Length: 116
Length: 116
View 1 (spheres, one colour):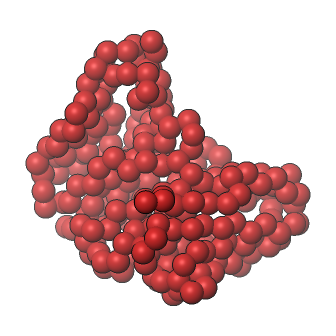
View 2: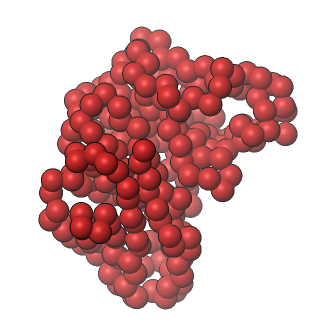
C-alpha cells in the first residue's frame, strides 16, 4: 500500500510568487492534515479535512494560505503571495475514518519550501 | 492549551549504548493520546507508537521501549543497544480528547546521533 505522497519535494520561489503544494493521502483515508515546520520551530498544525470538508483550520496563519480538497481525494495548499517567513517544510498526513484509538496520522515526506 | 517538551535538543551516543529520549506533556484533558515519530535523514515522519491516556502499560517492541507515567506527565522512549540506523530526529506528540479536533501538538524534537 502506498504511503502519503507529496509534490514537489522541494520548491524555491521568490517573494511575491505563488506556490501550490500537493498531497495524496493513503488510499481510503478520509482525514487529511497539513502541518509545517519553519526553521528552528516545532511542527505546527495548519488544518484538517474530513473528506472534502474543512473540519479544523485553526492553524492557518493568514489568508495568503488556501487549502482545498476537491472530491475528498488529494489536497492542495496554495500560498499566494509567498513571504520570506513562509519558508519551511510542509508536511501532509492522513488517517482513516473514525476517532479515538484508530486515529493515527501517517505522514508524507514533506515539501521543503524556500522563499527568496 | 497543550504543550509537549523535549528538553534534549541533541544526544550523541556510541553504538550499542542504551539511550533514553525524554518527553513531558501538559494537558487538562483526561482523554488524550501520545505519539512518537522518527524522522530519518530522508525527511519523512515515521510513526513509532501511540498510547492512550487510560493505558499506562509500558510497551516494548524489539530494541524500543516506552515508559508512560501519568504521575509525572512523561512518555519517555528508550532505545536499547543503539545502532547507527537509529540516528534520526525523534518527535513526541500529543492529541487531546475524542472529539473532532485532531491536531497533534509536537515537541521540538531530539536529534540522536549514534556513532559507530
